[in-house]
Image 1 (cartoon, helix red, strand yellow):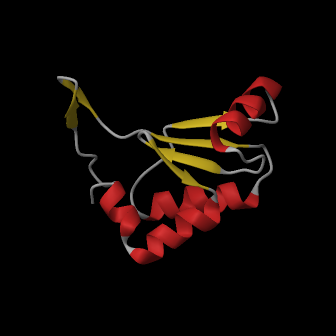
Image 2: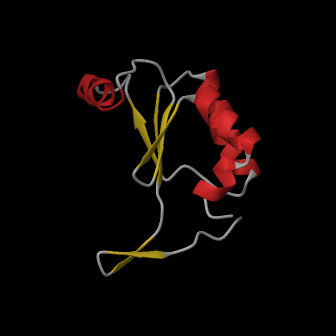
Image 3: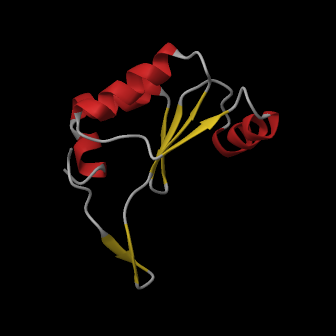
Length: 99
């Protein structure tokens, strides 16, 4: 597993948390999770929109999207799997993950 780098934010020691809005059956979510796993990371929090309609509403309000996955790394909104894959291929994902 890759080591996550801790940073200081407002005087507190923190690390970037990976959050993914998902559903029980979502091939693109599985692909996103595998991409992170290949880099030595795991999803810190999975929010299942098919289990809680309020979470779907919150996701849509936050992202403007209604499809999953929707991925956040720290405070940065990444987007869906296609967006994640694009920034991975460009090398930007490694910078965001501090690896």
